[in-house]
Length: 294
Image 1 (cartoon, rainbow, N blue to C red):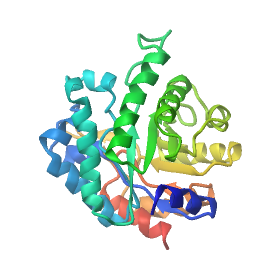
Image 2 (cartoon, rainbow, N blue to C red):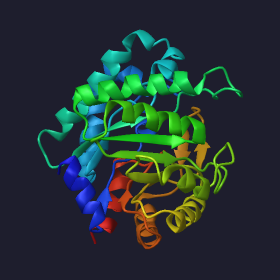
Image 3 (cartoon, rainbow, N blue to C red):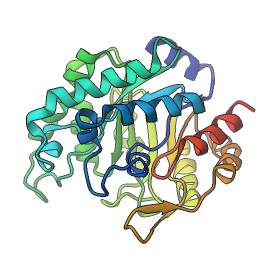
């Protein structure tokens, strides 16, 4: 499946399966809580490879790279900025190795910088856009099939990310996905309608919802977004709301079968690419994939 065929599939109404959670699954594999997942790209690449492979075995047709926190600004917080290029290119290489020539797309994951933009914070929109541009350049150098700007909460930062990516490539499909972690609003008060109004005329091919709160809240956000846009919708909800276990690790109560049972609701509400975010294990994803292709 090429990037071009992805868009053709979506235009004709096909439903595709994206992967599950990176961070929470790597924590189960031993990544310390609070540590950047990108650290393991260089220090434990086999774990990242095994997770990629598990998602493919579960039915993922789109595999995200372990680069969510891969901007220079975000890596700086974990003392990894000097490894900016190495981390991004190695993560893409790991995903391509897991795909191993199969009909699966590698999506370059770009998350927020982790900072508020000026005037609320100390990062200007121009600095953020330049940082996203630099990461997108590595995505293209590494040969990703599409770029997923995800877990956005601020329209200004999302627009900076889209601007940075489109300075590098006008050809690759771009997803821009928001996290509505206040129910049907982001932490900055952005609604699905706000997202559609801001993004419908930008060079974004697919709009999305990921992370967020409960399955019910995510479904409500999905329905609102579907009312406001004709673009295909990317949908990766959490496996329920997290709780903390005795070791300080987040746990998620929604079982794989229960997550799979929700898929018909998501399809009816207009989701076209379905996966899962925090708490979504390969077992969860297998249930989702089974329901998608039932």
